[in-house]
Amino acid sequence: MATKKTAIFTLTERVTISGANTPTFASIDLGSYVDIGDRQALQIHSVDFVFQGTNGSERIAIALGGNGAVICQLTDLNRGGLVFANDRALVASGVIDYDTDGGLDNTSDMYPDNFGKGSDDGRYVVNDELYISALATTLDTGSSKAVNVTVRVNASIVTLGAKDFMAIAIQSTAADN
Image (tube, rainbow, N blue to C red; front, side, top):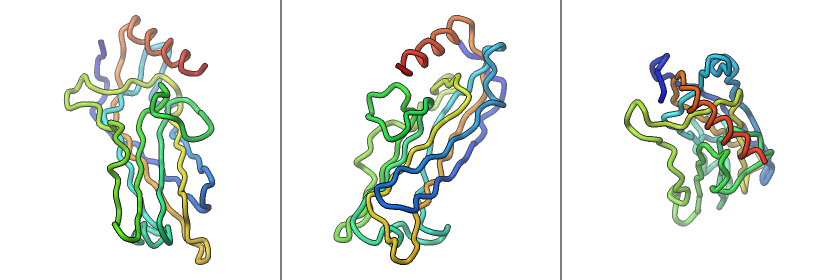
């Protein structure tokens, strides 16, 4: 299966949403971690989404300015926007809802962003980039507010067997269609 080359490390990237209902994008470059010739892949163990307001200390509710939601997804193919949960390129997703009467809720997004507890558990990525798509349904634009979503990817580098690497590469190519 997979032979570990590194211990678990964390990759982070932040996307700043400055307009309501305007998709915002960022990417995480994996070119230094993935090597096709050596069948080297990135094994993702878990993904966390951290939702913050305009600056690191502002509450998300203040930045939204009213009822709304923030959606963020991580994919291993560039889809150019948010995708449905059945898209094979989807690695992880996070949603946070704000209701002025009920407070914050993130239970509407049930996609597993934790791929297991064992060292062999994880999502293998052989593409050279991860793509982040984010959207806020509302935003308090009158006072130049923004929503920041930091994506934290816990991963390790592995070497895959020839058959495993080929299977993952074929699946990734098939998902591109």
